[in-house]
Amino acid sequence: MDEQLRGLSRGGDDPEQAARYLRAALRAGEVDPERVALAAHLGHPAARRALDRVDPPASLRAWILDFRAFGQQVFVRMQCAALGAALPADRARREALGRILAACEAWATDPCPDTQQTVEDVIVERLTPSLQETVALRQNPAAWQIVDAARTAATLTRPGWEPEVAIPVTLPPDAPEVEGILARLRKAGTQLEWARRGEGWVARLSDCGFVGAGGLAQALAPLCPLKPMEILGLARPFRERAAPALFAARLAGEVAVRDAIEHALSPDLGL
Picture (tube, rainbow, N blue to C red):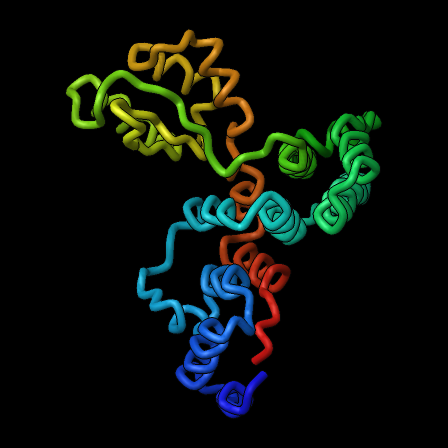
């Protein structure tokens, strides 16, 4: 680090001084731009100023989905942090959730065949509840559902993960046939954007939302040259991508989940 950067880094708790340091460090190649971008996404004041981020806080769903820009491993770590904020009181379910999260975090640190196999093992693991546990689960189904949410998150470690997929469509977004369909899908939490691709259009999908992959395939079938089963094959990996973290927020509260994610993912910027 040169003398200018060394001096700027002594900004203490002053966000503007820290932002000037980060701008200079970015120009000098002393800090990874993606780390600064991640810090800004997590709400770091100096990083946001350094990147001139003035956008208002996003909704929880949009904020969660935007982690896909930082790659598969970060996206999995984000889901683990969210789920970890919603540990169930029931011991058996808490232990099951802990095993899934530990396997996913090990994969995120070292995404190799061995850690992937461990993840696959916990995805298919089934606990057989006793009669007493079954009665308790009926009274508090979230204790089991949070484990299922973690299994959904664990599938995001699988090969072939992409931030989004492009589905060919035959009509532009302002066509009368499209407007109503898009409105219904967005209301169901589907993250779908129309974009130009050569001479035509594509629908860029990053999350099926609560409509699911099947519902999305059915809705897009009249607008797409592909068969519904072909659309389903493209959409299935994007089924409810945000759902595990959103379910954790329902149990633990949005503030607790945001705090857990920020604490787990905030990079060291050397300030």
